[in-house]
Amino acid sequence: MEVSITKISRNGQVVIPVEVRKDAGIKPSAKFIVFNEGGNIMLKQIRQEALRDDMLRIEKIRRSEEQIKEGRFVDADTAMGDEEIDDLLMA
Image (cartoon, rainbow, N blue to C red; front, side, top):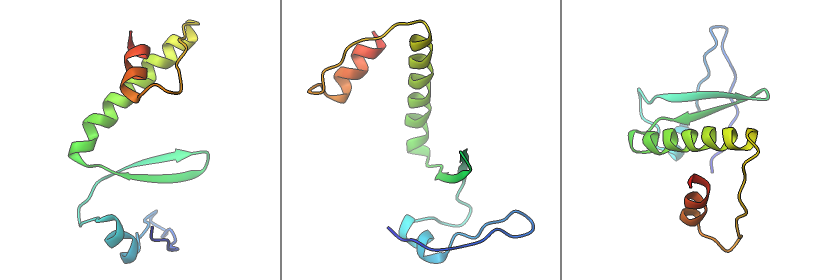
């Protein structure tokens, strides 16, 4: 993991230092999703192959939140695998 310090310009631009770009494999014209989580700004590079998985994950989280609001829940065993837990939650 590469760590570096940068600053924001008057125009709101932030330069990602070359060491970090190289370490992350970021090429010119790369696109990012920008998040603000409690004042911590996070960038996630948009990669075509990962975008579909991210969108499916967001939908699963949304459905889970609805189920929690409705008072529905299930018990999962810590020995269960990810797919078993997903199946249990999506039933």
